Amino acid sequence: MTQHPDARVFIVDDDAGVRDALGWLLRTRRLLSEGYDSAEAFLAEMASWHQPPATPCCLLLDVRMGGMSGLALFEHLLTLPWLPVMPVIFLSGHADVPTAVDAVKRGAFDFCEKPFSDNALVDRIEQALAQSAQALAQRRVQDEIRQRLDSLTDRERDVMRLVVEGLPNKLVADQLNISVRTVEVHRSRVFDKMGVKSAVELANALRQA
Image (cartoon, rainbow, N blue to C red):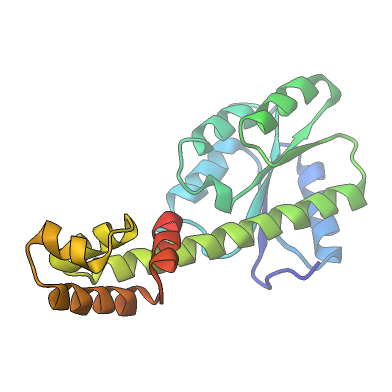
């Protein structure tokens, strides 16, 4: 699977041996990684980020750690709007499997039980990074659409709303108390600014945003 050259795997585990082994495994697969010995250390790192990750990433998170648990960190991540950009894979001991399964139901990407198969784990990591890349691409599309929306005048927004509702130009003109020709001009400008060629494309773009 082709990965983004700047894709990054964050490893949060209080066992230095596990962090080192995972870091070595990922290096053999040409994947960059960063290790953190506690949930608190990773939270401190996130606090230094001025914006959400802009390149694909995922988080390998130990369920049971001293101090803040992996589950408590996950609870915090669930409050962030950009969790889809950083899929979470839990690393769990046998006793923690039910907890990890519950976390998957609530939005975690997956869990791997220790001791895990290297190949199976890397496969899931690559799939998580692919999902992260897809979420980032979708976010870029949404940002572009919102920028296009911001460029519309109030009157163009009025026309756009009625066009998306399926009203023909004559009814749009009646509703806004303007001429059909004026509606046609505004409609053309809306399509141009939004980068679409039809009302259907316009409606799809708005749904994406």
